[in-house]
Image 1 (tube, rainbow, N blue to C red):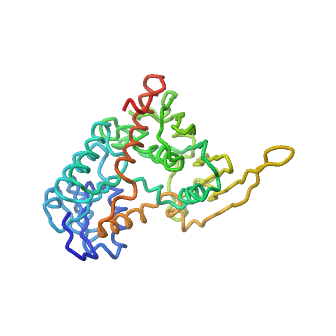
Image 2: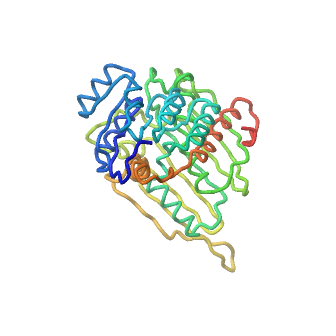
Length: 366
């Protein structure tokens, strides 16, 4: 990594600068510790758009960025199938790397990425921005403070509308990989973070697809068990929520509230429980107790947020981006180690295998 002694700002590259790349560029332009941004994309028209929209240098040539000694950090925001190739090339070029989830479309590729980071001593963080999001960090704070006791059960209910068009690379096996990696990896990563114990095994079942042009699955019912005895479930359907047209004059959550969209967690410990609800903008905490008649439960906290805080609360890519820049400048390790992200990745592939075979899949077989 090419950082001069006492550096307080860096030059950052974006590899595969599509829609997510544009979001990261906007975050970086708000970061005072970034002195320059360069972007790469394989499409000439996107390169022209990046130059015009963001006023940055953009190129179709990957080597223009990897060979630049001033580029200390790259964000990989390409299609999923390119993650391994770009990550390995950037790490070997001495760059710190933030790669969007999923790590890769095969487990072997994900393992190779982690091994390369360890062999080169490079910085590699995977984009699990929910670990920065206030809705979920509040639950972690309650857990760490002992307010829930030992977490023994988590349940996630996620219902949405079809989220990309029929021609998107995200719905193709070769480029998108799977729904678990592309979208649901966030929602099994959080329980791993909260429970703090290795996952032992997973069982996943899927009904036939409703979305006819998807090559990947559009629904899951998934159960997984932790080494400490805790259990988690994820129920996901992508087609019930009303089709989202996206009125630019209205808040996204407000448009979807009550139309069939749901995204909720229930996190249960032996001393209390928490619930997160994106569409009602609430976080609740219950405290358990004992009385002569039996166990008691009392709702002790209800927290809310405003529509202006939505991004910070449930998809905080902004603070993730700024934190990674600060860590690279300070010579600190990733907030989420690549080995930890690999465990979430293994769980995703195990869930897919379970859905394929109808069998419980042990994580130690991966």
